[in-house]
Length: 120
Image (cartoon, rainbow, N blue to C red):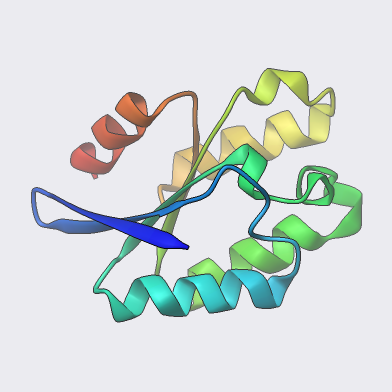
């Protein structure tokens, strides 16, 4: 898989390029994080379709486990998608709270994601 690297102000951003699921397990996220870190990235941008649907079902605990790894290894993550398609009120609250902290962000588009990254 190709990983596009972009420098934006003083941040190095990794964008793994895939039209399919690339994160199904916690180990998948660790492997991808290692690849991106090796390229110097401190921020990773993925799309909602890059994650298994179980990620967005908070009752599985998968999102918490994966996002904890990003926190532990000090890599910011931006997930781009239309999150209105997920009916869970808990997920909406989770997204709202995540966006307030800055380390993990759920954004509607790549343009908005870059604006958020530049503002941090």
